[in-house]
Length: 133
Image 1 (cartoon, rainbow, N blue to C red):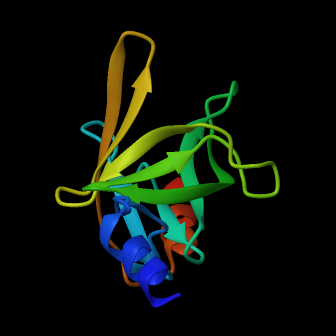
Image 2 (cartoon, rainbow, N blue to C red; image 1 turned 180 degrees about the horizontal axis):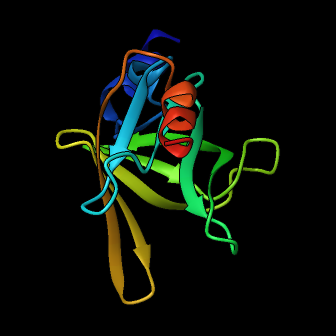
């Protein structure tokens, strides 16, 4: 039995994919060139993240869109899924570079991005404050 255990630990490749427990209970506030506050992320646990996005409605008013997603890390990227854990996560479509904290979203023939930073206060309150300005 010890030989099998040694074999498994020694010869099977170790994946660089992991669930990102280092982000658990952390928040990111994100901005773009045209918006000082555009949205953000709250990492709920080691698998789920809440994504916030400030959007403009058809009547021209800003509102906050709040969605739940899965996340995991691969090398220096925090991958964000299209769907929630309840719905099976779906494809991992966008990512945050863990070194630069740049959030990248592939969109048609270009990549949209936002620059994020760690945020220690209540992110949802900050976003509501920004929308109500």
